[in-house]
Length: 301
Image (cartoon, rainbow, N blue to C red; front, side, top):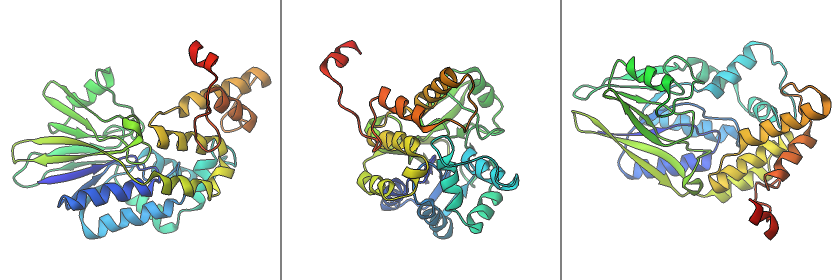
């Protein structure tokens, strides 16, 4: 049995379509989706339609990610303080472009699942960890070892940190398929994995696949996302282009600049001028392209 495992799509329907095409081309009809289907890329409805197609025509196991929880909590609490701007504009844009069908679907999803097919060993799947969609699991970290120790099966599939990796602790294995939509490393190729089951164990095959990045980048330029969250969109486009993730670096720098000048900073009230400085310091323009550095600057870095 082969199972395709997708995580952290973040609205990149171009990458998701490529991953689906690859998997179906290999004869795969079983899918596990590990959450974070939307936010960060434009036209989230296109990604949701692909998720619905997988759910309708294939054997698909789907759980909720932290981004789906953000959106649901925002809806439950009466649409709070998200506003236009790079701090929360991407979340607001996504929220405004989803439907009741999408929210009801997110509401129906569990945060954790156990897959126990007849004739095969079971495995568990979640977004962050089995008890927390936002928990980060990295190899050799204490919390990761604790999570693996308490597994009911021998394998955990999880996403959230966008790093393709396998690690084993006391005979229990953690598998992160990487990110479909905002992939780190490997030159920005979309990343997922295929589990191969022989009846006794599961072996993961990591895939790094090139796809039509020009399509999704064109959609950024033609969407309201770039006006609602200009710097955040630029950082996302840069990651899509390069596989280099600088979103936290730029967010923290913008917050620091705001605090230095104003004496206080409170998310999401971070003026765009600080985001613009943080982008420039990291040599990224508003289209997510690298700004050429002068030779002297290159020598100093």
